[in-house]
Every structure is written in C-alpha cells, then in structure tokens.
Length: 193
Image (tube, helix red, strand yellow):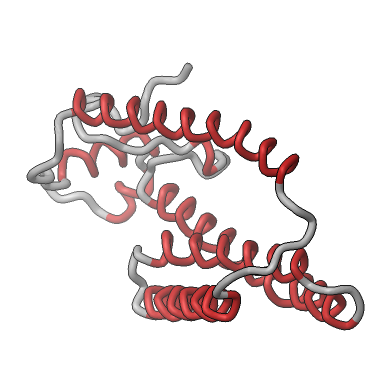
C-alpha cells in the first residue's frame, strides 16, 4: 500500500509519529530504555550536586577575593578565548551553510561564549572610554549576535520537531520530550503528567 501526499497531510500528528516510528530503521547499538533512564538519572544527580557545590564556593569567592588582582597570562587568556570564539563561529557558519545538525550545539555554545565575552569585557574594563567601548560592543554586537545564535537554532529545532510530529505546532520547545525508541512503545511522546 502506498500513501499519497494528501493522505499523509490528513493524518494527525500522533498518526504521523506512529508511521515514522514504524518506517524508521531501528538504530543499532542504542542502549536499552532502562540503561538510558539510569544514565539520565545519574547525570541529573551529578549536575545537581555540582550546582549545589558551586553555591557555597561562589559565596566564599564573593567574601574572600580581592577587589583588584594582577592576572598572570592575561594576553594568552584573552587571545586564546578569542581563538576559541572564532573557531566556534566558523564551525557554526560551516554547519549552517551545509545544513548539518551540528549547527545546534555549535551555535548555542558560540552564543554562550559571546555572552561570557561581553560580561568579562564589561566587568574588567577601566572607567572611561574603555568601559564605554565594552558596553557598546556588548549591547550592539555581542549580545544581539548571541541572541541570534541561541534563539535561531532553538526555533529551528522546534520546527524540526513539529515537522516530524514530535510536538504540536502550538507547543513550546521546552515541553518537547527527547524521543527514545522503545521507552514509550505506543508513541514517541511520554505520557502527560
């Protein structure tokens, strides 16, 4: 039996997901659903433990760090950071040009690097024209570009999820589950809670 474009267009998102699940080849080497759940649980615990440990460390730094500090390897630090930023921008541009899914992590990471760059430029600048230049650069270049690099791929990811019937078009990306084969055998979307 062969489906026509009209028949596919008339399907509900749930019917499309079921069709995709049935037609897609089973990925080889994918861990079991139980292993995936266990890894997800332990990674989440690890992240939360790190976040909890970072809170007292941040308070300690706020109380003990001096207001002024002469940094060792200052030039190497900033040049190295900018080399990393240029590399990530090039990787993102390449992935976008070639329409590779690699654009999702590279664009997001590049956006985060630009936010960090803006923050440290402003916070480490001296008063006067140095600070003015850092603020203008952050507001006019770094932060808007960071927004484009973070929001653009997230919108594209949402579009892909809608296109593949993973979420309803009125749904938000943050509600989109990660589809795991065989974890939810009747559907790629977990049951509502």
